Length: 255
Image (cartoon, rainbow, N blue to C red; front, side, top):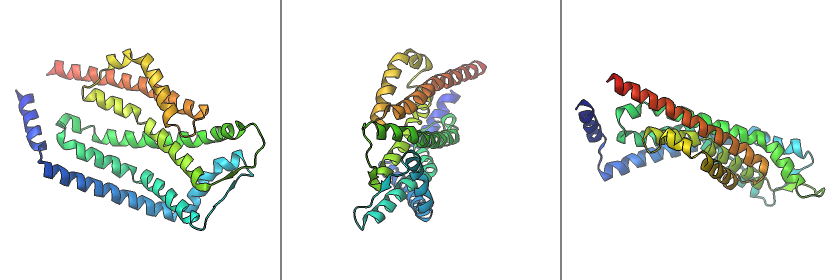
């Protein structure tokens, strides 16, 4: 009876009208935009150092490669593009927290305690995925340059090069969020560790397809660098699910 009354009280406290939901959504979106703009400003200030950091993999692979601006406004567009990507990355902690705060009112008290682990793990995995994408750029660029089969002069539009790196880092960061999603679904009772364990063969195929689709460069090195960790994360999410299930059973038995 206590559990039922607790759930009823939680639902009553979490109920909002449609206008209250819209007002809450507006507030969260505005805070996300504020974090994004603040991140853009910071990126604008450190733009030159950041751009050198992004170009380093290309210089290592093709020292004679040149980045060419094809119009007077291309430099400004490039800087704005880099600042937008930087604003997204720098603002990510606030964005994740706002997403969680918007979802929290509809959760039970025992589910709300996962707020900090959710945000911290999501942020860490996103940054870790972006780091893996960056260190994968050297072999990926080497393969992409050599696959042409001839000794071409390397001239690139900087906005296309930056887009490739940014999409690579975003794709890896999003792919590395895979275990957070699976664990969240297990906490919500949508999936079980046993079911995930039974889907291992299908998971390998799905992960390979996803890695091929979301990897912007399409090279086998990047796909392997993304797909292999995703499968490891799949197994880790099963293990975490077993641990959480065992804790629930112990708590139920103690109650």
